[in-house]
Image (cartoon, rainbow, N blue to C red):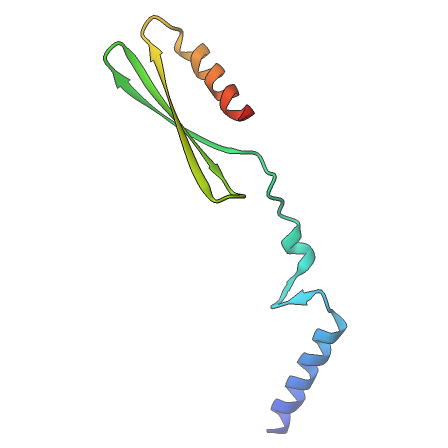
Length: 93
């Protein structure tokens, strides 16, 4: 039983020496992951009569919400150019 008390006392003493240590994780390590990272954008393309439908999904880690926006690209429009414009628009939001 003495070995358990000694082990516990050593563990408590070690915790006192490092006050920024909580549950084995340093507070500096937790703060190192910023909320302001690059946005996560996902998009899906669906075929439709007369063109394509593009759905952009954006997940916001800070508020834990997912937003989606739907765009229509007509058959006559340049698909690559429109996707580029839509992606830039979504990144600016």
